[in-house]
Image 1 (tube, rainbow, N blue to C red):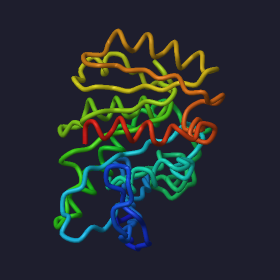
Image 2 (image 1 turned 30 degrees about the horizontal axis):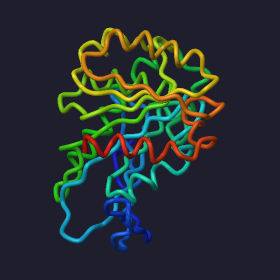
Image 3 (image 1 turned 135 degrees about the horizontal axis):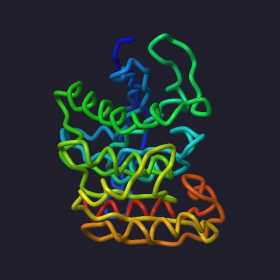
Image 4 (image 1 turned 180 degrees about the vertical axis):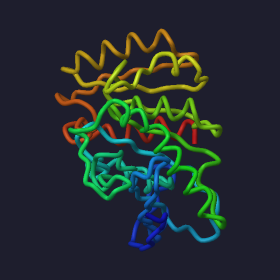
Length: 253
């Protein structure tokens, strides 16, 4: 399986200081990357095409367990409208990332913990591919990660392993340990501000926040959404979350 990008564009409005700034096209690239063990990882990079702009701050989105990069509701649009590039990754076993090295379809439901352990490396592989394949534009001089439940765990573990650290991480319904991905020890290695969001009925998320905060080396801010759901589904039931997350990211990128 070779690595590739497929490019296309559509119309968009970029906002400046929360006011409509100017019209432009969004560039959208479908990305296919082969992981270290040959699993096909799919992603989409989207950014506003601003004349003369070569350096983009980028937000990586890592979805919830059992969902895909298509479930982010209005968050990607909110981010691109604010001038950010957005890299949405389908974690292995989800969305379009479902074929292993033998082209056998593989679902997250049948994966072992050893397969989930590869999530951080998969994310790093995609990030490094985007950096290498875009010589005329830079996307990862300044960047952040937003992750939901297992995506939140993956965000912390990937941030620990990658050399070029993100400026901040946003967690939606974080967990201490899931599918073999254990977060606290790696969180203790990170010196960056973290923003964690859980819903009103998300007892496990709130408990995880309290526990993880003990390991944080910098600010670990929390917010309780009025959403009665968890993970990335909170964006659907709480329309204010996309703006709240974007506002946090603007403080760092």
